Image (tube, rainbow, N blue to C red):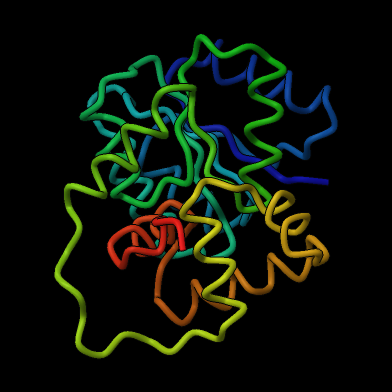
Length: 213
């Protein structure tokens, strides 16, 4: 069972989302109304996924994203926001969010997004994934002198992550189990000191691994 936490400053929306997820088989461990309590509660309940609004009254969810990602390596943050503004999307991803969904998403889309986020996929409302990867291409940094050493298989998986394939698609492509692909992804994240697949895709793009070989 995937455990979740819902962060939103509107009680009716927060409780409604929590109830919908619980009815669909998720374990809702907690809810929170603001950024400060979100980080504190997340540390206590350690959910698989934090569903985070960006506009939390007088505070921003971006600060909570940073705090949660820094404190809990096993917890992923999926933004659920009314805003689809490019600046908000990029700010959330740079803070460590694994994905971004707008509140106009259907219940089925939300369930799918939370499930995929829990398994490590980077999930975005259609149209936003291209924005994020395009921005990372523009931000591509100069090559590092001392890049961490990845195995041949880790590099192969990383190349497919950069091309936008999900873990299951990578498993099918390389004739591996889903668990083996996830192990390679987690190992690569640790070696590169990254937090999620979005940052992993950025690293791959910066190093030219998204190009056809």
